[in-house]
Amino acid sequence: MSLPLPFRKRAPRHQVRQDWVDERLREARIVVADVANHSDHLIRLACDVLVQHGEPPAEREDARILLVVLEARSPRRAGRHRPEPEDRP
Image 1 (cartoon, one colour):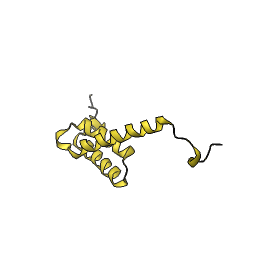
Image 2: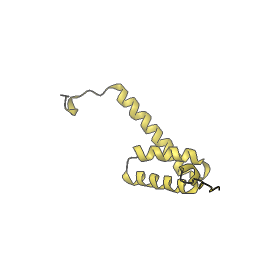
Image 3: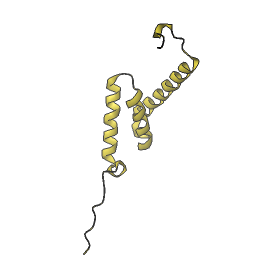
Image 4: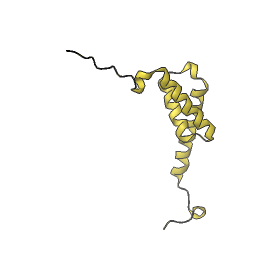
C-alpha cells in the first residue's frame, strides 16, 4: 500500500518533468497562436501536445478542432484518399 499524497516526498525528477511539460506547452501555444507562419507538420505536433496536456478543456477542444481542419486540408496525409482499383479485363 502506498502512502497518502500529503505524506509523500516529491522526487526532484517530478519537478523537472513538470518544467519540461510546461515548456512544451508554452512552445505549442506560440505555434498555434501564429498558425499562418508555421508548417502544417509543426502545427499538428503543437495541437497533439495541447490535446494531451492543455490545461483548460476549451484549449484541448480548440486544438482538436484545428487538427480536424488540418486533416481536411490534406486528405491524402490522413490516409483517407485511396485510389479506386481499376477494373481491367
